[in-house]
Structures are given as C-alpha cells and as structure tokens.
Length: 583
Image (tube, rainbow, N blue to C red):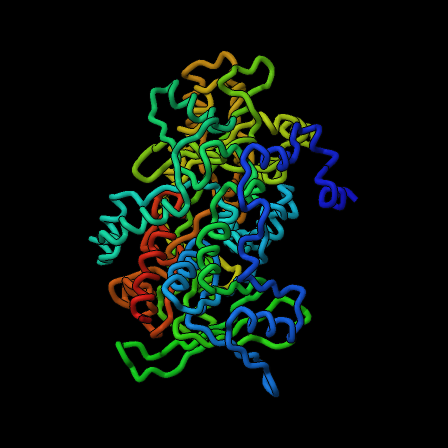
C-alpha cells in the first residue's frame, strides 16, 4: 500500500518525519522554463518498442527511412543502415550526432526506455528501478563496491550529477606519452573539448549553492584550503538536487536533449527498449591484421509482442554501452583479446557525514541536503584524490547508515535533511574485471586505500571546521564524534581511528563498509598494440575491422575527475575519423 501511494501520489508517510519532500517541479519549471519541458525532442526519430508488435515495429522503422525485410521462415527481421550504435550515453550519443550529421544513416540500439522531464517523478525507488542498471542495486561480486550506471536513453548523461570537467592536462600528457596514443596530445582533442563544452553550454557559474556544497566551501575556507567551482552542463540558476533521477526541469543537458536531438534532426533512428545480443562477423582474410570483419549485430526487443529478433546490417558497428556492458557484448560475440573486460577502474568513493542542527542555523548554511546543484564545489587533496558532494535520497541514505539500533536509526533519519555528506574520490591504480553481464570483480589497492583514508580524514576535518555538531563515517561500527567543545587532541585521536574498512565478505573483518562508484572506465582500453589494449588509437577493435568502441571503457587509466567531458570529447574525435573513413 505504501509503495502504491509513493508511485501514484509522490507521497510517503515517513517523509514528513524526515523533513523530506519531492521537489515542486512545476514551480521550478516556472523559474527556469526550457524547451525540453514541453516537447519530446526525440519523437521524430525514436521507436519505443515496449508496446509494439512485429508489424508495427517494421512499419515504424520503414517510415523513418530504414530498409527493412520482414522475417519469412527465419528468426530475424533484417534492418539495414550505415552505422549501428549500441548505447545512447556520452559515447553513443556524440557518435550518433557526428555520423548522422556527416550524412550516414545511423541506428542507435538502446535497451533502456525514453523519458522526458514530464516523466521524471523524482521519487527515489521507482526512478532508480527504471533508470539504473539493476535498479541501482548493483554490487561487485566480491561485495566491495556499489556501482551506479544509467540504463535509459541518454545513458549516464541522463542521471549523472552535471559535473563537466575537462580532461586534466597532465592526464592527456600521460596517455599520449606513456601509452603511445597520439589522439590525446592532438589539437583535435582540445578542439573536441571546446565543441563538447559549447554543445552542453557548460558554465562554472552558480547563483546559489546547495547545503552540502556550502558546507564544503565554508569548511575549506575556514581551514585555508583551496576550493574550486565545478563547471556544469546546466544554467547558472539551476538549483535542482534531483538530476540523478532524471532532471525534472529539463535544464541539465544530457545527450538525450543535445547530441541525440542533433542526430535525429539528421535522420538518425533510436530504437528504445531493444538489447544488443551479439555482433555479426565475417572472415576478413587477415586484412590489416584483423581476421574478422564486423557486418552488424543481432538485437532483441523487450516487447512481448515482437516475436522475432533483429538482424541489423551495417557498414560500421560501434559498441557504446559503457565499461560494464561493452566487454560482455564483445566476449559474447567471440572476441578474445585479453584486455576485453580487464583494466576496470571505478574511481572508488568513501563518504563522511556531518550533522548541522537546523536550530540557530547560520545564514551561510541554510537549506536541506537534497536541495541545490549536486556538485558545485571541489577540493583537491592530492594529485590522486578529490573531495566532492553526493546525491543521497532518503532511501540511499538509510541503506548506507550503519545499523546500531532501531532508536538510533530513527534518530538518524530524523536528522536526514540536515546531514551533509562529502566523499573522497580516488584515481585508482587497482584494476578490476568485468567477466560477464552484471558480474564485476574489484578490490582497491593498498595505495588506493591509503589515498581514500587521507581523503576521508580531510573531509571530516572540513565538516568539523564548517560547524558540524557531529561527524562520522559509514563504517559498520558507527564511528562518530560529537564536536561540541572538542579539543584538537580529541579530533586527532578520532581521526587516527578512521579507516577505510573492507567489504563485509572479506575474511577477518570485524568492521566493514562499502565503497561506491558512479564512474566506470578502462575495461576495453585503447592501446598502441594488441598487447597493450583491446582497440587501437582510433577506437577500432584489433580483432575485427569495422567494429569500434566509443565509451568510457576506452580510457587507458582512470582519469581522476568526473569523466563525462573526457568520454564525449574522445567520442567526438573518434567518430569524426569514422565519418572520414566512411566517406
């Protein structure tokens, strides 16, 4: 009954007690009207398969300019295009726009559904279920890290936290010099970053920060630490804390409101609710050292009314379904390069919290934890570690809080809206693996753990300096410190106790905690040879001509900052090259 009330009325009996309420989207839209709130900008090119049958699907594809051949006695409907792209996120969306604009007939295959601002409820449970892989409850097989990855038209760009940070210069130099990948040292890559930031209208302006970012900024300033503004792909006045559940105002510019709109305007078709199963290869007589040639893919529509699979025939096929899903697609198709599924980096995150009572709250720290831009401030701890703030709805908050007793949990939930979180994010050296769909193994290295611990300690210092009444971590024993009257020696003793505990399934763990990851990279990395990577410096598979990868799995290492601009810029460069080769 409670679940039904939440879904239908956007209400929950517990919200009042916690101080939470779903944002008033209508009021926000009045303040920041956008074209995306009143239109479905992809309607002219999207085919939503969930409610279709075979005949309706084929008719819709044909009406959108695709050559189709209905199945007769076989199991497949045939569809022809120039370019087939699997995935519509940061990589696939950009590739679709560039290639369609170059005059090629593009078909985007996306297993998720198409939503617009009018569809976003900002209700945590049902939104996570339909927008995230495994409903947002996706954990590594060795239970060390919770993974968040988008699965909707727009991919991760539809649910990310808006941070739009250019690839750091030193990272570009490292990838170009140490990994032998000239694209990262090229003028074309810098031009691609400019083009991407222009299309997303990136700005580092922010009229008013949210509560959590105010806490980080104030704490850093009190300690004399530098704090940077974080550029965003939204307007300066965007004060939405719900973008991780799909931006209800339409102000955030994901690929679903930018690049995919460009693609559709140039004749691209987006097949939503359709999952790629495997790629189709032919023998290639060893041309260019590649023994196979990719000629398309096989996909399955999610609709019960569509009885046949699709055989999509294409001159070029691009896997852009992300670092967690590209490796299984390539492996299921028979590719054997040893780097497919290896070298996975996650930017592991460990969180600190601080409670700021709303009695006598100072003007500088007004607001609630779920209000305002999610990431607008960043503090750099070391070359490898940064501190930012997360989006935590009441459900996610409750799942991360250590259980001490029912009474304690109720008190923590009562404090929810005035509990600020900040996390340490590390450019990890450890490499995990993707060994199947939904099967990921990851353990941070000892050095990664040390970096996380130092970052977590810094985050706690920032909370204390900002005036928190109580601070703590999410370690299972409920480690916390009451700050009233605390002496320096007491704070140092508390910080000495802070650790980044291992996962609950690790042997010999008295206390445990889970890491989180919203950035997945490197599991199909570029390399200067087949011994160094799964694809070459142009994104083309070392094993199959005409097969490209165009997502975060390409990155040679972790990038160390939010990777959206890096992935889109690399996709822009690679797809420009693909367009030239097709011409």
